[in-house]
Length: 361
Ligand SMILES: [Zn+2]
Image 1 (cartoon, rainbow, N blue to C red):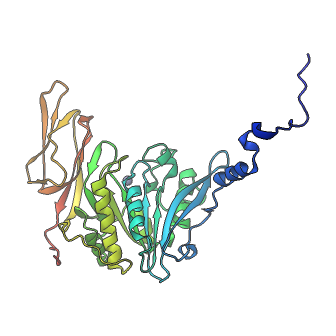
Image 2: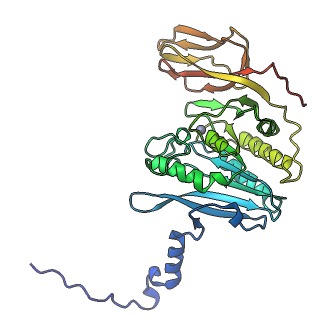
Image 3: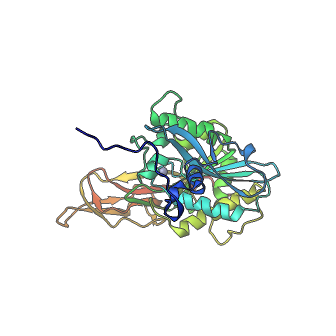
């Protein structure tokens, strides 16, 4: 068998026929694009240039199977005057993306104007989930149940550990930005531990539709941040895998109002928005049979005790069940998917707080 003889050297290519990849300028560009100069191992606000301009980083957290670095995109603006470090995390659930646009809007508004401190946006906290347009990490782990991760744990635990250690621990205040899950919708609401008056104040100033008093759950990013002494709140911004301008705008303006209160920006007027409804407690209600769910009350609708909050039809259209509210409340979130197996969610009903009325207008 004879093999074709290959030349020992690449034949010289000359003149206009030279393909573009031979030109050194193009080759240099390719190398730069593949190895971004803003890749860092650990984010530190002290290393952000204090010029009130927007700086973009990629914080490398973990290597994938072929040794490529999975890096979270981070944007930060720092003022020359010292002050608090306010962090925002978005897409910790990879399909909850309204928060990304909130960070974009906020950074547009803050560039050149930050009076003190540093504002940091983690645009995509769960990069593998974001790529797959799914809530969980690529291995199916819900990152918001395993915080602060483990340095010697599974892939997701290691990723979570480094996200917390190398980024989140630098914050003094954390807004963890979420949305509803697939098949449901949320209003704009804040979940926070209102026993802490500083957190209560931040939650109110953000002017969401609802503030829900809710001690942080173990394993959540909010709970883990709280353990590190960070003032942490969860902001739920409408629906998954969508950009919803009204909610994005309201959340971004609300966060700017909090920054104004911290002396980090000039005053922000959100007076036209009503103060939030404060809920002392809430519960999800579920179907006990399968079928088609209809007549679920709308977001922010107030429901009296005993009022219907969902009718379940069988597949032929005959009513099987009418679910009634066991207490008077307000609809925080609701199912938007009529197809219901037994145990499907109906509404997330908040109990409006009456024992401790809001002292301020
Ligand atoms: Zn979420």
